[in-house]
Image: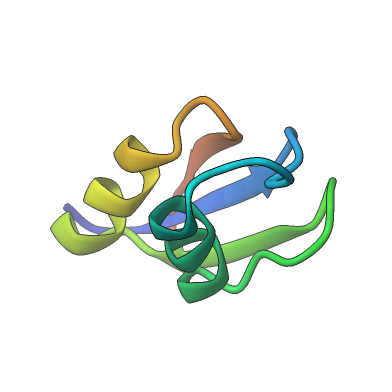
Length: 62
């Protein structure tokens, strides 16, 4: 896997379990509609999978 992922928070973390909140903060997401670009690694893919119902992710070529 090479490249980057653009991850956007599209649903609120209010009322979500603390584990999911920690995952979102670990990716650098704090506010709705905030986007971050992260390296496409298995660890980041796993984080996206854990909160896939709260974020959208798209692949970017680097």
